[in-house]
Image (cartoon, rainbow, N blue to C red; front, side, top):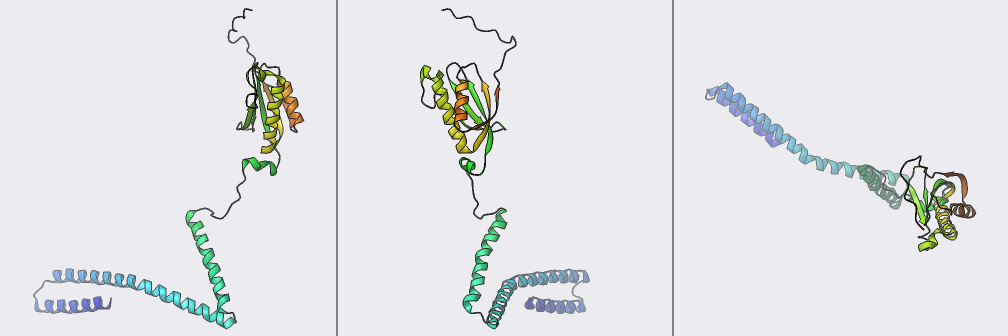
Amino acid sequence: MVGSTGLLHALGSALSGVLAFGRCSPVTANLQTQGLRLLASAAAVRGAEAAAPAERQERAASTAVAADRSSGGGGAGPSSAAAPSSSAGEEGPSDSSSDAAGFNVHFRRVVSERRTGDLGALEGIIHIQNTFNNIILTLTDHQGFIKTYTSAGIVGFRGSRRSQPVAAERAAEELARRALKLGYSTVSIRLKGPGNTKQYAVQSLAAAGLQIKSLADVTPIPYNGCRPPKRRRV
């Protein structure tokens, strides 16, 4: 930076000498002077950028010296002075990482859906679809999202045994166990289908510990809609 300023003065004096002898026009001399000023300003900026790291190091060193003096004057030992600095160093990266990422990176408690029963009782809807050959029980929330389901076939019954009352009881017991594990203690029951084993399923749900809030039959009834199938010949 000093060298650039000296060079500027030397060139200015040389230009003034040239103008004095009349060897260069004033316009050309003005352009040359402006160019030299731009070069000198660029050199000054580069010098300031080069001196910035050194100034930062000097400031950090002076701050450390001041901290050591203050700790020494207070009567605290070097170990006590190092402890806050280490704790500050530990806290610094976590805060900076959380700020840079935009979210909290600390440990969070994640509660699984299977453990929601510990947090409180929930209320759901049990849909029972009973046909002549099977019974299907489904547990949903009030928004209609399925939580769990079971059927007579899932609990181990095959063939014509799926239409027996014992199959409906076993399927209802399994669904009640799963519902209580998920935290659903109060349910509303909706029955659908022409099967005759729905009442056994409802009794098993109540006996398993579920509190039945309401009971409704939502079987669709046709009002002369589709043509029924032809009568079976026996």
